[in-house]
Image (cartoon, rainbow, N blue to C red):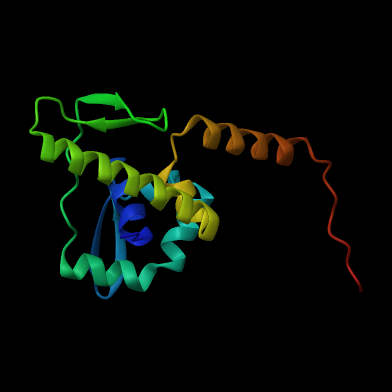
Length: 148
């Protein structure tokens, strides 16, 4: 099942952020972390603030542990799974990897800000951010036109 909210929160939590609710306000920890968030991540937090507060108050699910090995599937993509597991566990891991790929395709099409949060360290996403920042930096400054 695709849940962009939890996936986005887990992506932020894997980068070292944590969340709490105090006086009905969403808090991001550590305090300086909010300043380091990208525009897409801030947009994700603003658009989903009430839902995030509900999830935090109910309790966040534990993060998945990092896995050790990768295998190649019929689609020639590398998906992380643990080695030395029973066949049923490997099949479960492959199904989970396929579900993650379907989730990413769905999120990229329907909610690009969440996709950018999930794939913050992806080389293509880093290149996109750098190109966007360079375009802004190289654009000529045009003072605002006042209609006085």
